[in-house]
Image (cartoon, rainbow, N blue to C red; front, top):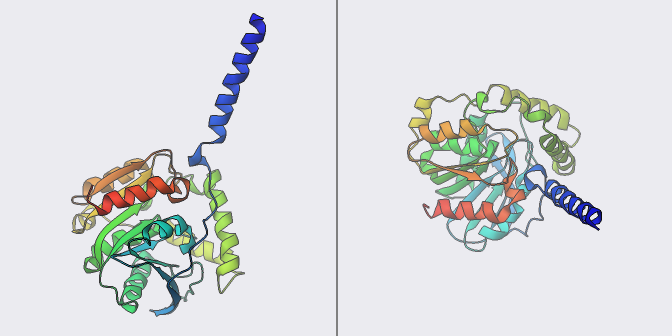
Length: 282
C-alpha cells in the first residue's frame, strides 16, 4: 500500500511539473488576434511610400506601432480594449505588412518621419504612442526629434544601442518562430509577397548598426516615458532597459511578469493594464 502511495505521489508531482512546463506563457508565441472592423482605413501617401493605416473608436488618440518584421494586426487585443474610450490608430511601418517601401535604406529616423507624416495626414496633433520593439525605438526617436507630436511614450522591449540586444536573439526558439510567422503574414499582406527574404536582410542590416544613441541624446527627452520589458525577453537585455530608465529624465520602468518580447500577445490583460497605468501617470 505504501508503495502505491509513493507511486501516486511521484506521478502527481510529475504531472504538476509537466503542466507547469507546458503552460509557461513566456515561452509561447500566441497567434495574432482578429482585428475589429476599423472606422476608417486606407493607404496614406507618406514621404516616398504608401502607408497602410486604420482608425478605431473615439477620444484621446493612441498610436500603436508594431515591431520589426511584423504588422499592425499584432495589436488586436489592444485595439479592442482601447477603442472603447480612445481614438486608436494603427499602421504598417515602411515595407511591413500592407505598406510599400522605396529604395531608401531602412532606418529609424526615416520610419519615424513616416509616422510624423501620417499624423499630419490624419490631422492628429498629439498622441500617446505605444511602441513594441522597433515601434518603441520609433517612439523614443520621436520623443527626441518630434516631441510636439507626443503626449507620452510607452515603449516595450526597445533598445537605444545595438549592445542592448542579446547575441543569441535570432537563434532563440520563440523568436525564430516569430520570424516564420512574420514571413507567412508578409506573403499574405505585402504588395511584394515574394520578397520576404530580401526584406528580412534589409531589416537585419538596420538592426546591425541602429540605433546608436548616447546618454546625452536620451537626456534631451522631455515627454513622459514608460519603459516596459518582459522578465523573459528573448531579444533585449534587462540591464540595458534599466540603463535607459536611468538616462531618460523622469522615465518609469515596468517589468512585465512571466512575459517575453511578445508580452502584448501573452498577457493582453496585464499589458493593457500597464498602458492604462502609464496613461494615468501611475
